[in-house]
Length: 451
Image 1 (cartoon, rainbow, N blue to C red):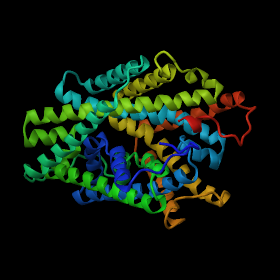
Image 2: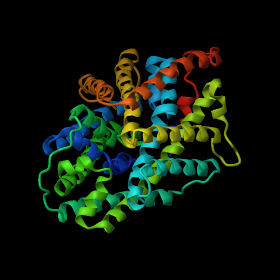
Image 3: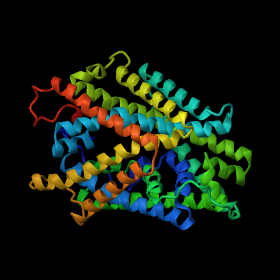
Image 4: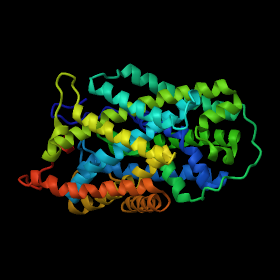
């Protein structure tokens, strides 16, 4: 809802804000990443500590984004803040990264989760997960190109399936499983930094939740409450499901699992339970893939509207009410990334490697932008100010720097390819700027207003 002047109306209560935050953050990653965190920690205590630390880092980051969102409202989110703090060139690189790395990488990542659980139902080929992932992206992209849209009821149904899956796994793991016998961990090279890459991937979405501040009643008091309670609930959910995994499978068996929730259900209830949970998670992942396809295509459409070099992306098909070219390009990149992930048989992990360095680089720059904008524009109205400034943003920036270093040092070929694609954007920028040279540098382009 908006006021007559077009600004958002502050109608959200603390309870509604908490519910939305939990709904945004809790995704299908918790059914995949715990096994990867287990193989990178080595002890149950360190495994659980990683999830607690992930909640603390997410809370600090969400506080920083809450100030940015309320002081400089704009639907472009990160693009908007980076443009104000660093200018057009770096903002373009962020838009390029979203188009080539962040969004298609996220689509491929989610599609691999879906594929890993579908092969529990239909184990027909060694590359079955990649096949299901690519086919899912192709089909959903086609449906969106033709104008097929999911209704709110469908989205609500898929969200309920995700909750049902969480409750089922937690209940089965805590109620029926006995403590597994100790077994040696596979030799994968234990690095806490790599574990945190997967943990914070699972916490992903808190930056979107911070944007709720524009519609929250009594922002200064309630924003911290929403973030604190929301992230506390998320940490509790993640710890419960991780304790269930530990109790049922143990750290060693968990670290070897490709579909940890299915393995838990197989051990506690039997093959029928494994197939049931795989079906629920696959459907939930399907909804996540489709939602990411929709949002990613819209930002690519906006990029085409702002930069003539990408003008073909900025064409909206009135008949189907979709940005067809943006959808098709995004789908092609995502399928190519699935094939790339399938080459080394490390699908999901390769996509995490591909996106992580770029993801944490721009998070770091967003944290720095908060400090820069405090210095450059001290008179700006800030309905919410991050507590313990500058310690909180400095802590968040230091964390982002550590995560950037970890995502480069402890990952493989995927990270290298992601960084190369990002730097290719610098070359593209030289060409793209020829089409926007006539614009005044102080004008914020349409991209920040239409994302």
